[in-house]
Picture 1: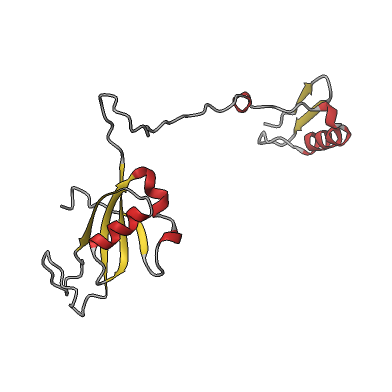
Picture 2: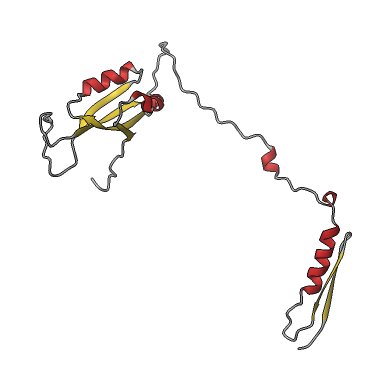
Length: 176
């Protein structure tokens, strides 16, 4: 079909036209592009209005969390949240008591601390680890502290060189 169709778009600021002259119905965009390009050259900044997102105009809602710190007896008690960490690469003669005492001296509330058995299948251990075993290069400890002390514990300033501290990774129940 070799029909020619003219479409005229009228707006208050400009007029565009596009013409379809090909036999398969495809439009020729040359006149549309030229008309728009010519019009865009003469537009001023004042001809546009910035679209503003109204959601950004609203101040963000502030979420407020209060953690109790009172030591007065009010008839009930709260249970503080805990965080668990792995302290690794401790010298093999390091004791649990030494680590607990050190953390308490840094005002970190220690809930529990215990030595972790090595995972290496080549080193056999029972519950009482032998510090004189030459195959042990370092020890690890699982430390549970009050959550509000986590930032203190994760500060590199309080730990001797070489020690690593990371959140404890719990095994999933499916693997157990």
